[in-house]
Image 1 (tube, rainbow, N blue to C red):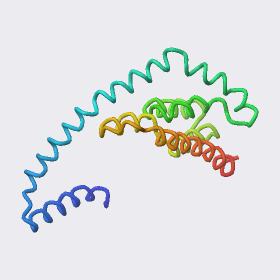
Image 2 (cartoon, helix red, strand yellow):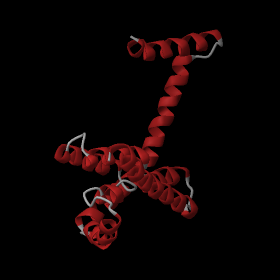
Image 3 (cartoon, rainbow, N blue to C red):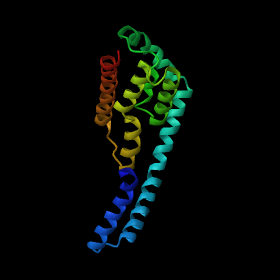
Image 4 (cartoon, helix red, strand yellow):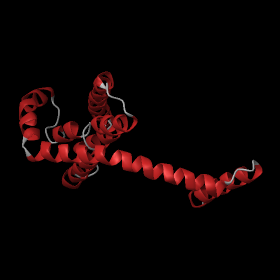
Length: 171
């Protein structure tokens, strides 16, 4: 019942608060909408550039080449090779990573070690390159080296922690 009334309740609270404070709610809403459209237009070139870059990265075979380099190392430490593409694509594209996670769960099952690991990894990492490209570009930040390093380090920690947690809980 709560979920049915939550959003209408929030809207009602906002409208009542606006009325009590003599804020023209509709005009403020329209101004916010105009601002949102302007932000969307500003973000469009960055989104397009990122999408094209991801497509080129995957179509060129660069992803396969990188995976083949890391495969012997991951096999030696017991990291499942089926998850390796997800670990590499997750910092780049959330949509591609979600597609890979869906395929892994469809192939191995949601209650399999691979299914658990893909799900936990999906929730423990972020789309660092996407975030830096789109959001930093939208606000005009040019020097993003440290943010990139820290973001990718956080993704690596998330990937390693995902493996450790899934091994402890589900092995």
